Image (tube, rainbow, N blue to C red):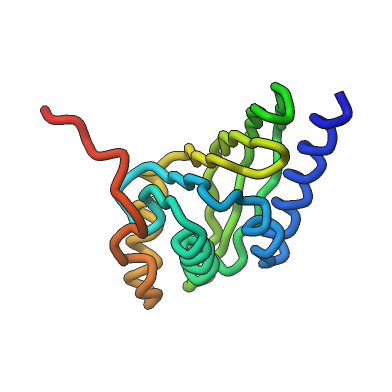
Length: 159
């Protein structure tokens, strides 16, 4: 279906924009009542329900990982325009303030309605990410150690 190809093309363009440090196309894709969720216990974790907090999250992402780059390994789009699901499997790379290179891998799970993102959930190795954010904070980037923006998610299960 042409619609699915258009969605896939827009997702690739959004990741390319992020790779250039341009969050504009990504932010423009979110619907007004979108939900943005990143699991774990770290500065990028939490669930956001409004445009302002989603914008603040992307600003924090850029301050912590200014040269973050994504490589898409697989992309799948299914459903109809009023209820679309997209999965983007990716690997990322970045440079720590001390020059050390690092990376992670994960999946973005998106739900769209009429081409607008209504929900984004980010799944990656959050234990790895928490450790890297600790290193970045110790290397002088204060934002890497801040409390999550939005509502906490992904709390540990009781023993």
